[in-house]
Amino acid sequence: MTPVREKNLSDIFLGKDNKILVFDIGGTNIKCGLFDGNGNLISSDKVYTPKNYEGLVGLVKDRCVEYNVNYVSLGVPGTVSYKEGIVKYAPNLKYIVGKNIIDDLKMVNIFSTIENDANMAALGEYFVSDYKIKNLALVTLGTGVGGGLILDGKILRSELSVFEIGHMTIETDGYLCGCGKKGCFEAYCSKTGLEKIYFELSENRVSIGEILQLVERKNNLAILAVNIFAKYLGVGLSNIANIFSPEVIIIGGGLSEVATYYYKSTIRVFAKNIFNAYKNNTCLAVSKLKNKAALYGGYYLLRQKYGQV
Image (cartoon, rainbow, N blue to C red; front, side):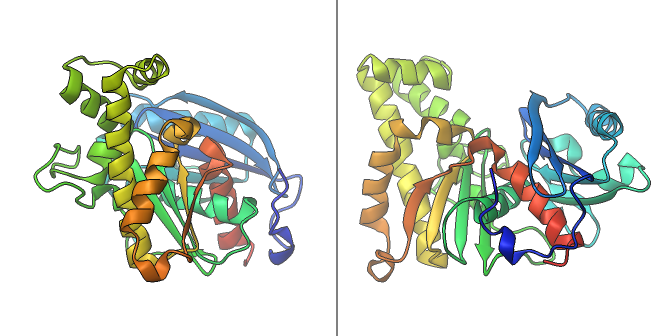
């Protein structure tokens, strides 16, 4: 895929013979993408996330050596301190909390960067997708719920990575979230959230895939569970629109792959709850990059850092 915004980028970054390795580290899986200096994705694969920190560091090191890379970009499912390079909070991968992964790699002659995974994915959507806009929000639905906000082509930041929309309260005193709070957006609109909703209705513990199979068979409880999921998602997305008014909110992450099951219902709820003044300003869309958005974002993050974008 050729980035449509390539003409806006500096030509001094890297070179076609350089290699860039991007890791999108999730609570369940790690996606890895190898790029050349021109932003072409050479190869990608997915592995299970190691059970401990040493395994994670070892995996990253081994891949860097295997591909003989010049640059590495890490996306993590948590809050990052940019000054310290430390992961401050990661409820779905707790063993990285307090760690400086870049320092612990102890690899010389490799330029590196670390960022919240949803921020990376938002940056990827901004540069690679065909939206002719300056402001974009991405909501990733997977093991957890993450978010990234692009304003004027750059990730919204403070001293820490921000836009932790997965932990805004969507239901007072609702389901317990992995962060320890109750009623978080993530507790309802993640994979485990939908499974929890179905369990509350049926008292049967089944996987996402099984729930969607039941929907196909016109099972009323499964259909109701997906509609409840869509309601919470629509409300959460309208909250984002009402506060930030981005030109587009993109649904990404693993659950974007099955958006046909909930997208229409989500749009209806979103339209009912968005502030009237913003109704013609913010639209919803499903990610075109799907689970590769953060990989492309990691490439462009390095390009912004070292290519003087």
